[in-house]
Image 1 (cartoon, rainbow, N blue to C red):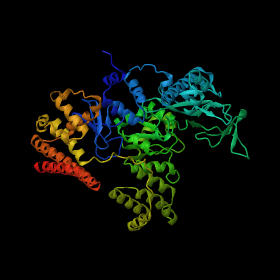
Image 2 (cartoon, rainbow, N blue to C red; image 1 turned 135 degrees about the vertical axis):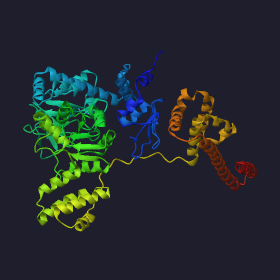
Image 3 (tube, rainbow, N blue to C red; image 1 turned 90 degrees about the horizontal axis):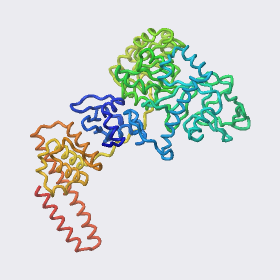
Image 4 (tube, one colour; image 1 turned 180 degrees about the vertical axis):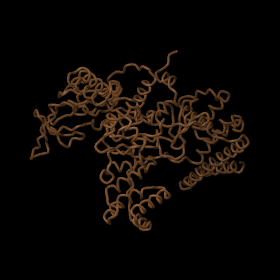
Length: 610
């Protein structure tokens, strides 16, 4: 029997395993539940049915199959979701006509080919082998080089671009993928030259961007600023505008240590955490993530068993990054080089994490050392630092008091200026009271004075994500209709209480749903509804499994529900007829008025008979 790729993927993949690789699911009877990843909520309303291979959120009404889930969670079109799941299921998709491939698909392909190109350069070129030797000397193993697909960008102007053009891509496409730069004269050249390359992966381990660490480069652009304009001239007569988005301009004596892919169709640094594709399951298992700042920090940590480490790659924590992390755990340990009094970007990220309900701890790093340095020197030391991480408030108190003399008025003022803002952000009043007492005790001042100063502090709310719009509230009739269908699925014998005339009281979609279910009443366990009804019927089937109600209560509720639906529909009809009568009277159409009055009387009689 021939199966389409979609059917084959569905047969090979279990929806529970697919969704649980993104969010934490808990068993709930025959189903699984979770906090919905698509809207903010405190109680789980997101359910997954392994029997029906569907999911639905009863809070925001999102739902569907594995393809719908991947499309929404990854923010991709169906074709991209198909590719992601086919790769996961080991299903080979037929080659497409290149002209039909979307821009997004072609960008994925460019990134994949570029990653392979860089890897080949690391293994096959003279300077690439020197770069590999450097990596090995830093403590990165051969296995890690392959696992993280580390590569090398040759020190040539168009080495990568020419290769990609030979594979059928245009120079404009290469530029859009963030791998080339176009100068003022319209010439293209490679963004990454003479650098060790770290591919940046999405949650499905597909390369979508790159970070490049300077290694050996003899041809970094020499920058000369013209006094007459903002145009910058580079070595070799090339020009570029210093306002170009994402472009870093450096002198030949001081090349930027790291440069990254700018924002593209696939890559947005504020939405990506380096290494999360490899760390997500371990974060869930250990129930905490460790945040570091660099690619090598992540790689070295994973090498020594800390597989729950990810990097922010040069950005402060953003709302979107935190939203993704929260799918796996609400506990964060940070290993940033953090100065409470000075590094406000880092502090804003931590404030935001606290505001979103994260439990934040700080790994106190030795001065001028990063995790990669510590691991290469002493693996046990890194483990000790992780295990001795401090709560964010303990860290704030310790570092702030170490910077000031608590005995002097100026010192007390400096300490309170920093710590009162921190204490003000604590949402729990009991916890806040504890830290007020600690500050009062350590500063040797009255608690009342600390509280008085705390009241003066005004805190700006940390930036949050754009407000998610929930679907409009359903009408009472819609809610009653949904309840009626759910009750029927729990007890199909109630179909006997619905006459053929009653179907006129239901909305079109509910009427079609009930008609179909009535025909298939003896096959409810093996339903295969038509495509136009599939989503709605699957929604009701899942809803009926989740609902808990006794048989006696169910019978009573069913009768009340049916009566209420009829009552509301008749009242709606009476309101409509009343408006039409008024309109006919204004138009002096007496025959129409008489006809509508009779219709009104019949509806009124029906309402009384209920």
